Amino acid sequence: MPARKPATLPCTASIGLRAPHYREVLETLPDLGWVEVHSENFFGGGAPLHTLLQVREHYLISLHGVGMGLASPVPLDDSHLAALQQLCDAVQPASVSEHLSWNRVDGMVINDLLPFPYTREALTLVVRHVEQVQDRLGRQLLVENLSSYLNFSHSEMSEGEFLAELVRRTGCGILFDVENLYVNTRNLGVDATDFIRALPPDAVQEYHLAGYSMHDGCLVDTHDHAVYPEVWALYESVLQQIGPRPTLIEWDADIPALSVLTAEAAKAQSLMDKSRE
Image (cartoon, rainbow, N blue to C red; front, side, top):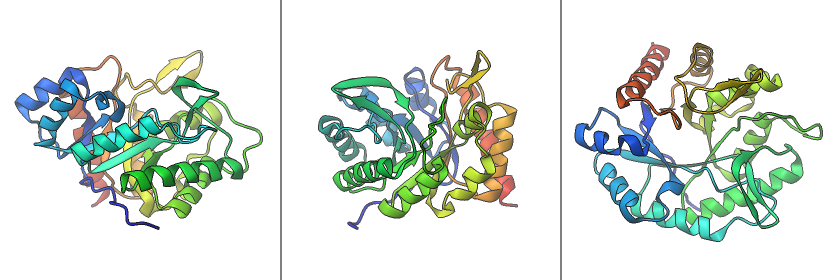
């Protein structure tokens, strides 16, 4: 396996940096060791990339992708991968991550993170795509568990087992989205304990926390609320079972004041510190 730069985020809590807060963050420099941004927002270069490079002067950067489609049943989009490589060369991120989902088929690109059956055939496909990304970037890729709204009857393993085998075959890491797991426990009856036990702890490199919405009795991963008490409780359990890891507060719609986000991050940091006692 070729040498790949591992994820190197500090084990602290931080926030997803979104456009409404660019100026305030640069002007006030809140006490954050790192920030995470969506990779695709900077593929075009120009003013957004110029701003990100200014942020990079003060904080480590985590690049989080939403458009790669690692499980798409077609070859990866080379132009997308080239743009990500160029962004990594410019920013030198401490971490690069992507979702375990698909988004392309028959020449169509779907602006969503879609689930797929956890079969051996799908595993072979995702392994190939993850290896391609890691070889191209010369970096370890963190792969995120997905929030989903359906189960596939022909799945041959659980999502946790799928991720564990993906790690074994590729050396990738895991971005464990705790809120996504909670959504799946409520919508699909996923057993949180079984999911956590399936993951190789050393492969878990980062946690995500966010708020969901309720629609027609279904929890939807909208990232437009503060973290709910039930998700905080699950996060505390994860900290006890796996241990502290860099933790991100995601908030992508109805974005509140920066102080609200940093307060959420401070709560996560407090729970991380408590878990070390």
